[in-house]
Image 1 (tube, helix red, strand yellow):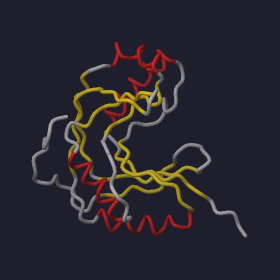
Image 2 (cartoon, one colour):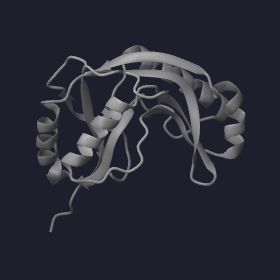
Image 3 (cartoon, rainbow, N blue to C red):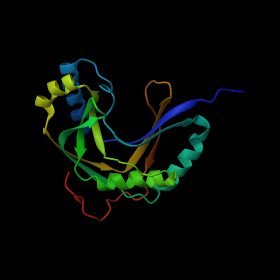
Image 4 (tube, rainbow, N blue to C red):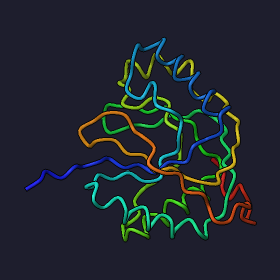
Length: 193
């Protein structure tokens, strides 16, 4: 029997070129301070969904996503500052917060609903550095803690990326354009960041 090819699939929102460039600048500053770190060269994104499954399910996955985006409205994402949180007992993560998380959270929930998955804790963000140990965290805090990062970008699509489950770089599979490319008519700031 043939060995099944497993892929690590990820759905992401991609910020505009200026935000990507600004995030990249912060990643370079972190790399100058810490040396090379995981994700130092990954492009800025907001992860919506990630799962590993055999390649033979990809076509079905794409069809479900095509159906999902037909009635998805475009929206604007606003960021306000750089923040950090704990990852487990000993690690930390620095990220750019999303000041108006509700539209991203709703899209995340719709994706999980489409695959009949339960929603867990989800906080939209753009990762700057993850799995940072305590010493590295202490080095970075003076440069990053509560730094303002006020940007906005229009989201009218999400992208499906994949890489071999064993590792490697993500490659673009497909971009899914939202069916309704006008921002939904509800308040942008439903709750503060």
